[in-house]
Image: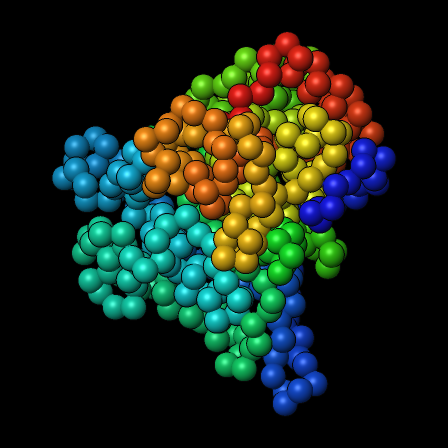
Length: 402
């Protein structure tokens, strides 16, 4: 979806059949024999990189479980961020490996963790102040080698694309740390210079019996997936934590039972699997939570947009995925979003609970205008009924937008 508002009458693409992703070769430019990758080829590499980091991710997940059970010392694999949220070795290692693959091939990277604190060139490996335990070092080394091999396959003269990579290394870190790994995803989005989500990979590394995933790039006709069996019942996908009265009311009006689940990427895959009939929320997430999932969902015929313009004007408007230096947080409405410990800019941390008056009070990549994600069938003929339900629920219980 472009940044231009889409009217409700706009046609939606039909969902594609779920098939394995084909290997896509890089296209050669005519200038000097240099290779210019297609977006699809870059996504193919990201998908293979997700597979390459899966053994390491599984090993970290097991060690985090051992730390939770006090079988290994506290702090060996996890730490707390400044906002109180969880950080694990997997967050840092997966991001470092994906950045290693993508940095030479894109013009910028937006990611959840601090890139300057990720060190995987040689052991001892250190990410965000945590030193990788010796038993994990061979897996990190192997993952580095496999990621480097993927990059080598593109050739040394591969030209970078005018794209920004948006990475959530482990979407659902809370679930990762609490033994619910099947709800965690690796999310990689590719955004255009205009800030549009143009390509993405969403990958469940810990799903059983094998990883599940979806990849998409609508403008190149790429929509492939390897997902769980199609669900027989649909629910209203919502947070596994607190949900607002607005969300509860909306689920009733849409005639869907509440279906709590972790992670934005996981919920989008559940939409594609038929387990979710809608994923709509008034709570905030971040750009790295939604860029890859949005591109994937839209390539499969669905929609992911801001809730606020849909509720107030009946328009589908995408979040912008431009780096903040190119135009800081354009997706903002004064006195709408509540400042929280998760979205507060450092200077506004003493104002938690208040409504944000200016964008500088919020983290630059905070999504504070809500989220509307619908699978293909609802995003098409059912969009008008969805708007009616959203407005009725908002009249009964205004969205909280926090």
